[in-house]
Image 1 (tube, rainbow, N blue to C red):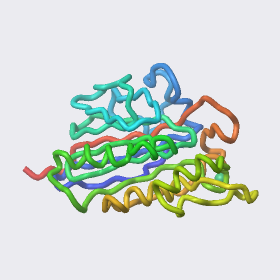
Image 2 (image 1 turned 90 degrees about the horizontal axis):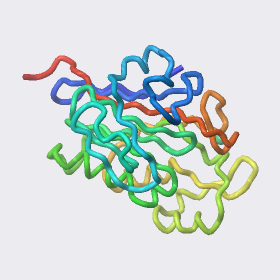
Image 3 (image 1 turned 90 degrees about the vertical axis):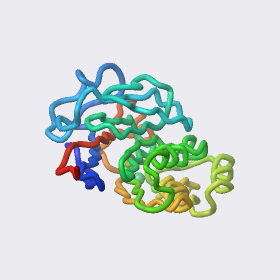
Image 4 (image 1 turned 180 degrees about the horizontal axis):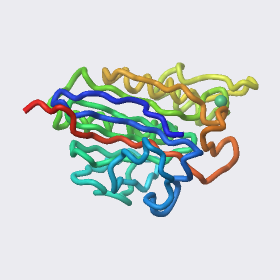
Length: 235
Ligand SMILES: [Zn+2]
């Protein structure tokens, strides 16, 4: 069932929440999420309509100025400061990242192509844009994704990613094959921007609670949902 990855108070007293669905919560791949998601309690708490992106492994960031806005936009990150505007990502093995700033939150879809394209930098910039905060206090919440244990990777592409993020991304699978450590890449990218990371660490390929393209070739997807809700706001 869905899990809450984090719940953080913002300086205003509002609350930022990040929830991750699991395979048991249904396939959040295509069509209307309103009809495809069963009524898990946590998922039901995410205000609707949600913003769903057309994810293309790029670095574009969609600005969400009201609930459901920018749905269908070709982008791999979304940002908002609007209460009740749920941002969503669909993933099977790629890394879902939520960024929580002072007033704004973002989600970013960081597979290896998105990571190499700079989607995390673009999302950090979008959060900081009107947060008036060029350093500190930004937190990245990293959801379940494929671990290096299972992520065998071609040496040519691996070399290109090492050029961008350093040798920390080099790993071996459980079978001793060359592997990409996506979490390490996310860690390097966030460290360069001074962003603290809270990592889940679950491997979608090892753990059958999650859909995994690498494990089964599935087209089904789980979702990361992030939104801001009213709390005891400072007036
Ligand atoms: Zn694994």
